[in-house]
Length: 216
Image (cartoon, rainbow, N blue to C red; front, side):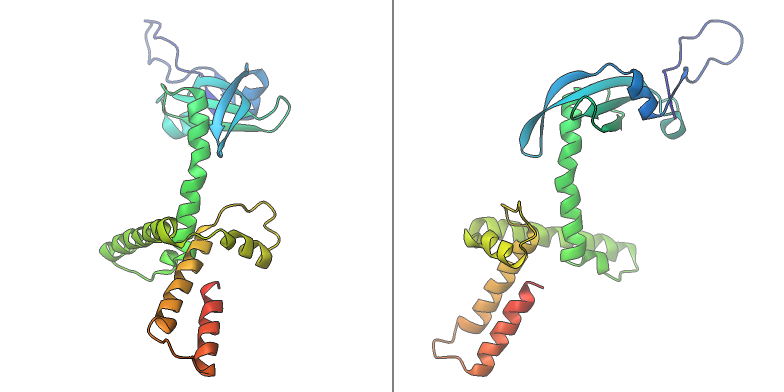
């Protein structure tokens, strides 16, 4: 529940008020808020959105610490996003852009846990947990750097869209694509790097199976 800032002390006897009048929920605040149109850089483009800023207290969470609530609408009658921050100095448009930038961070955490398997580690001691997570982030960084410097090919995204046609808007490789490319490069180096002669049928089947599993 949101409240206005505490009023100035009256000088009368008794404890000063810790919070002002009740505002209510973000939806109730948005019904009376004054919105302004601003430009926001987010998701790789510049959008025009409507924002309203309310200086208030989120008393049940932060107590008497002042916060700001940023209400965001992409259009005048569209759904509303409510952001609450303890940053009292940054411009509203920059805060909205900062919130949008968190998506890349969340995707990185997801890829590290699910794709690299850091989330499946069975560690029990604090030191092991700390080292496993850090090592997973190092591996993630190495894979991305290798792909950017040596692994990228123009046909990777097109091939991915052939095997996953439901990605209608896919234009850039994902981390899974990068990891698949690295795995196949390692497979090629392992099975073909030192064997100029014609491979046997068993070797061909082994390479084909490893190649398919690299994308699993």
